[in-house]
Length: 350
Image (cartoon, rainbow, N blue to C red; front, side, top):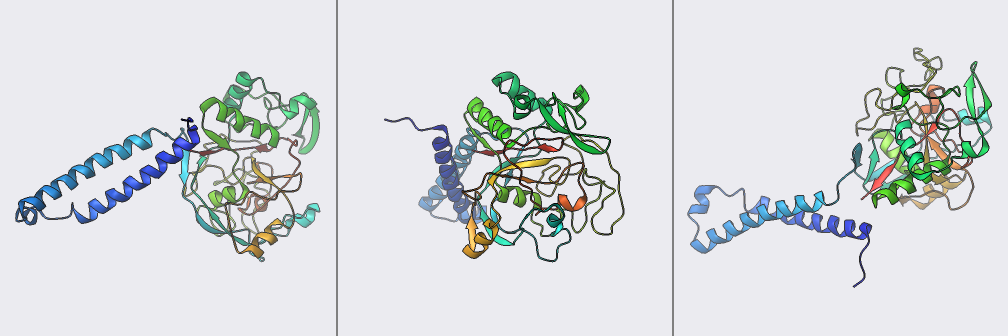
């Protein structure tokens, strides 16, 4: 008999677990609520049936727990329950037209998306986590191959030689105190390589989130510009507070990343979905893709365009204005691009 893969095994266990939970639900509703006095007045055969049912309930609960324990969820990942949501932003949302300033076509056309369950890391991948990957795999990042990356110095971006994932926003080597900061100077190619290494190392599936998953998880059930509501303050996220959203009060400008567990998480337990670092998504970018999705009605688990060379970034960074941190804001550099404000987080599929 051909051996099943770990993914197939996990799928079977999940299906079986759902079956067991369905049976448990029936027993819990039809059998367990019966009063003891009522059960005592039952005929002997009926009492036996109820007792057997209760025993089955206990066994099923134990089996269910054991089965789900066989597919443990990695530390620091949270379950994001699937559902349908409106992706993109309404026409009147402030900041929606900011792409024109940079001569890019972001396209935030609203459309309906339906997603399945997935697990997402609470945090962006840290310097410490990325270091383990490099030391174990010997992988060379795009920044290491080219021998340079984009940094911020004197308030301006410039290309600095010999800068890579080991370095911070200005190109200085990260200190031990920054090991829990998000890794920087990593390309889409590097992020995909990290996910591949994680998958091979654990025998489980790790990947970048799709753009739809990233926005859905960021919003956490909201439809406002930010998951914090109509405004985002620098007490809630790390961005350039000298450029607040609309006419709101200015905040601080930290001029650096902060630890990945900074600030309060959103309603679904995810940290820094706005600001701190831009995060890579798995999707390719094509300007008309959202319009095609809208024309299709409801799209299920979209993976982005099948054509195009650029890849999607989401979330905004520590050096960006508030409007670039909006839930719907999109950016799309080439897959080998890397700089002082780009990192990533990972999705786990059992």
